[in-house]
Image 1 (spheres, rainbow, N blue to C red):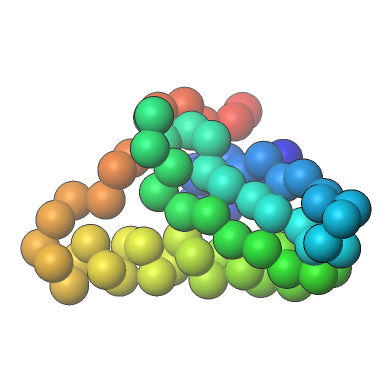
Image 2 (image 1 turned 120 degrees about the vertical axis):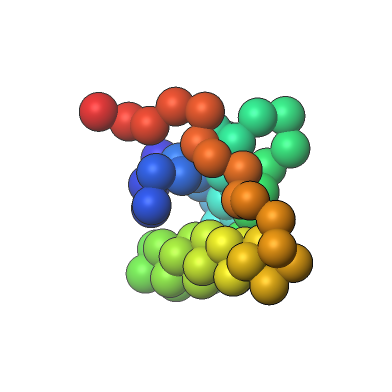
Length: 73
């Protein structure tokens, strides 16, 4: 698992595609972001980019981003 701005994501590797896939797991029943990359450095960058884009999109729409339901300690 990786964390950014309170959002926690679970990452799995799809051997058949040779790619990492991640999704936010602490935002309720609907993940606020999902992302993918071919390497570990890329998956973290894509996670950060996805969260930043989600927050910017909410701000642009005038809506409040879904807050993480729990935050790792």
